[in-house]
Image (cartoon, rainbow over all chains, first blue to last red; front, side, top):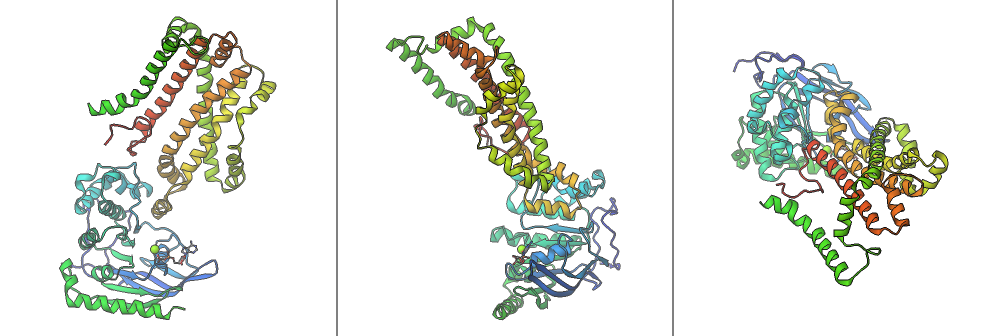
Length: 281
Length: 259
Ligand SMILES: Nc1ncnc2c1ncn2[C@@H]1O[C@H](COP(=O)(O)OP(=O)(O)O)[C@@H](O)[C@H]1O
Ligand SMILES: [Mg+2]
């Protein structure tokens, strides 16, 4: 696949003629998300202590840590929904001061609007961003087709299963062609089997239109299976305990989770988390 | 066929059975009309004296609908104010909630002193009783939007205006309809009680008037007409809800037959 350096455009101007542009190539190393000395204090309680990290363009990075360690807070800060107490966050080279059009977010629950059809839910960001709905309709349909939801474009969310709803939510987060996709435990409400399927689907969607993904999870297996890189967060106040590169071939298949190389990563991550527990006061 | 059974036959079985029992019992036991007329006699009075009943039904219906409309519009507006202004929420909301406990109907005689025996008095009482449940329901609707949905909208830089019209308003619709169902019933009660207290027309006046003459069949015919009117109004709201809130599958009114 030919690779062009950082040919991303802002969300407002995707070429409608090329509705699913797939900026190709693996992680180029250009930092797309950069955190410098980020700290967050809630009512005098330090939730996050001094986190600095670079996330490369097109990389799939997981934030792994126990519940309550501050993963969501960190993600919401990158999304511009929560302000850091100190430190700086940059996305695409610009300091984050609020929500940005080049970021898409998937939450733990699908948060689809029940009165809108699946298609209109996917187009919701386009509406809020005051972009032309007509222009994005085709892209929405292609995203839905990719998420195997084409037949449900006209359905209401209540007609969809949990996994289908979350896939629709992923389509919604991608509709305005953001450079960065932030995902906060998107599969944690799903059953184990659906969860494996969703992981595979997500990787397929990601492979087709490479975004920088920051994926929050407390599942070690999920982090190891999906990611290029796993950042282990320690207990409160959260710091980065470890930064592990997952050097497994892509595309990945569920069968790989039975291989020794995969299990080696899982063991390593588990030890790393247990060690951070032991340090906790 | 099943739908027909579930929607109409079974729900009607109990009231029809009771009516038959009533008819048979009053005749068999020889109960006098002045105490309890049989259903057939009530229906007969409704047919023969329909113009008298209608003459008094119209003003009551008019006042009920006007009071209801004012309550809905006012209630939703106040709910919007409470929702958008934290100061108003903190200052106004507790009063509104506590005022729910006051039996507002007891103010009816006071309203006669203030506004006279005419329509103003009835209208004011209807609004007084119908307004608060409307406000509280609508406010609950606007404010109960899931925090993650709001977060999602803010991610895409949704303005307050967009968030209100595209999220809070549709989310509040089922709550608003619940409020309307309570309000329509209360508006009727408000008007009737006010007509009991002091009025020269209206179905409440007719009921009291017939009571004074010990004309129990007329009284019960008037009560029946009033009940049917209330039922129709409630049904109209439930139908409007079913059509508007299409994304919710069930409603407590005639919910049978839906899969
Ligand atoms: N808005 C807030 N106000 C006060 N404390 C908060 C707030 N949000 C999160 N916290 C605290 O910060 C810590 C991290 O929370 P969170 O980021 O949700 O963790 P995680 O997503 O890893 O489960 C928790 O202890 C939580 O109680
Ligand atoms: Mg969380």
